[in-house]
Structure formats: structure tokens, C-alpha cells
Image (cartoon, rainbow, N blue to C red; front, side, top):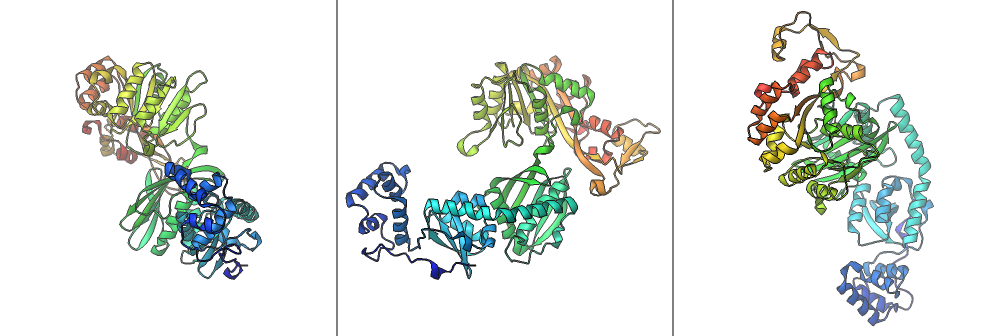
Length: 589
């Protein structure tokens, strides 16, 4: 049942008070209503001029004890020509209106839709000047919004009661979705996005929910929602590669983007600037964090959702794909009392997972571990984790500088991007701290020259750097369907192997267990550069990365390609996978 506008009280002044106050200054209105004296308004205006943070005139008069909240709201009702309600009948609020507005949005902005008349939704709200909330509510409900003023206790009680009433319906819906997760996959193509009806089965809501459920089931790390001239494309990144999932009609683009933005707590009215947000959901029994990034493009906003399964974090070095030799050497490095250990590789190569695994290995009650990250992807028990906040100038460098006053034993810096951060990390190492961080370079020797290129003196690099681990991720062959074959001579040459009769490689096939890709999951291949006396002497001479590589290789360092060959010969991945991510060391500049 809808509450029509004819049932709302008109915005009239109290009996005996003058009419025609609409649009007049608030101070004049409350004086005309006989609520305060002119000197009271003058005192409040003086206080406002002295300290703007005290808020609006009405708030100041409340703080001075000259007005109460109800009087302020009624005065605003006259000024803005908006109705004022002293109560909200939640029994007359349609369920479909409430289901279209997240409770977090309603509580954040103290706003609640209470009825719909034609294409206009009446919304009870505390702050009628919160135009951003009105705009967002209009986009959520695809309607014009007509605000109605209420008191804070009224709106708070109404929100709590109306969403409590919806709990039963929501619980039933959750059970239905969980049953769908257990029994069958929802076909995204079967969701009719041309259908624009409301209710708990609204097609856009179902479509976005299905995207998330499907991505979690298929082990996707990212969902890409891409806007083009005539359609919207959705692709999932599974084991490092993108697979096209579904296309949606162009007219559904704005609704899909708005739905994701609301879930991530973003400003749905802002379409010109990039935004970042986060979604937390329990999907198919798993606790899932989703990092949401939006950017404007020529054909509309593009969204990438990074899926982080908090229940499926690998925190054991033994599970990451290390060879026995590299595992022993890396364990030795992370147990040193001081020095700098770098992990290098491109974005998405698993550097953060390796650092988390290292911290998990050395974490104990008798040492103090602090991290500064961008963002904090997973929570580590017993570790102090700080997130970079560029808007308030909390950078890696500033966070690292603050850490030195927190008596740390081990510090992890998400990334060394500039000279300032590098020099503070070096200072931390020189004063007896173990520092772990990442850099974006193609190989381990390149990380050494990168620090020098940043402006760090070679003698500081040589005296603090103890090891560099370069890594890539390769897809693991599905154990259910992989098939053996004997490699050709050409393939042996590509992997720099001598001909070996009877050698067995494996290739991918594809089955239901691996979503017909032939691969299931990923693990790393590694190149570990240990900074010994000979390499240290080369750093002091400021030589190029190629010279460092030759010396390190002579001392036993295995290149990324060589470590990948080990994985191929063990039947864990394919030759194509290794060659896709690891260049021949002779080609590395």
C-alpha cells in the first residue's frame, strides 16, 4: 500500500504565526515563529563566524539551548517548503522500496523511502540539504525524490524497524541463493536485463550477484566489466588469463555500474573521476573481500573487481613452488637479524603472497612485525598492519619513518617506489632492522640497479641488501586430465636442454574439474640472487645488471627460465607456460 501525498501534512507555520516564510533566512524564520529573540540569532551568527566548524545556525541554536530539534526541523520545513512528519508508519512502506536501498546507505544518510506516487518517491530524511544523498537515492530507485522532514529518533526507529521486518524475507532469499550455489550455477545469459521490474528479483541485482558467485566458483581473481559503444562485456581472470564470460546490453550499463558502486560504498553520482572501494560478502560459504576500482572511459565507466578469498590464503613457503635449494636460502635470508630483502616482478606475479608467507614463517610473540601496505589485502594475526592513505599524505615513506619509532624488529614495506622510501628502508636496515619490500623489475639483478637509478648510493645498497627474489606465476597442470608426451628436439632447444631420450613432458587437455582449460591454480618460479662478497664488490663499482647476473649465475643462481624447466620436467606445468612468463636469461638486459 502506498502513502499518497494527500496524506502528508502541508508545511504550515504554527497557529498565529505569519505566512510567506519560504526561502527566507533561517534566523528570520525562527524569530518570526516566536521561538527565539533577535539577540539569540545574533549571538549564534557571531559564534558561526568565529568557528565555522560549529555547523549550521540551527545546530548552534540547539547547542546554546535556544531551540530543540523539532523546532529546527519545523523551521526548515517552512524555509524549504517541505512537509514535516512527526512519525512514520512502517506498515505502509512497500517492501520493494526498502529492498532497493541498502541498509548501510539508509543509516549513513538517515534517509528512508516511505512511498511511491507515480514516478516520485517520498523519502523521510533528517537533513534536507544533503543533496548528494537525494541524488544517489534517485539513482538507486530510478525515480524522482521528494523529501519529507522527520526527527532523528523517528528516522532511526523507522530504519531499524523496517529493515528488521525485511529480515525474514532476506533470510529466505539468502537460503535460496545458497541452495543455488550448492545445486547449480545460475546462467548469466538467462537473466533478462531488458526486464526493468522492481522487487527482490530485480534483474540488475541478480546479474551482479550472479557475476560474483560465478567468479568465486570458477576461482577467478578479477572481474572486468568493460564499457563499449554498443554493449557491456564481462571477463573473468582465471589463473592469470582473461576469459570472456557474458555480454550485457548497453542500456543496462549505468544500472550495473550503479549497483556495484553502491555495494562498494562509492559515489554513484561521480562519473568523471576514478574511484576505489571495497565489498565484503560471504559467497558459497567463503568470506570474500572484493577490491573495486572504477575509471571513466570513452564509452562509460569501466570496473575491475579484485577478488580476495580470505579463507584461501597460502601462507606456507613450502606451498609456493620453491625448489629445495631456493627454499633453504630464502629461509636463511628471512631469519637474518637485519638487512633488506627485495621481491621483484611485475604486477600480479604473487609478490605480496610471498611476503605474507615469509612474515607468517618468522612471526612469533617475541618479535615486533609492522607492515605498511597499499592496500592491506589480508589480516595477519600478531602483525601490525598500516594502509597507505595518499589523501592525507600517509605514504610508504611517511609510514616507514613512523615505524622506526615503534620499536620494530621486522618491517615490511609494500613497495619501494622512490628514493625517499629506499633511503629510509636502508636507514632502518643500518639501525638493526630486517626490511622486506618489493620493486617492479624484470629480474633479480635488475632490482639492484633500480635502487641505484633511484639515486641511492651504491655503497649503501651493497652494505644493506642481502638478497633479491624475482618471481613469476605459471599455471599448474590439472592433475585430472594432463597427458604425457615426449618433447621434440626443438622444444628441448627452446628450454636450453640437452637432448635426453625418453624424457616425458605433459600437456594440458581440459576437463570439468579445470573448467576445460587444462590448468588448475598457479604457483611460482623463482630466481634468488644472494648478495655475496663478489656481487657486493660489483655493486660498489656500479656495474650493469648483466654483469651482476653473470657473476651470480657462476655462483649457482638459477634463472627464472631454469627454475621453470624444473617445473616442466616434474610434470607440474607446460613448456608454453614457462616460455610465456620467463625470458631467456641471455635476452635480459
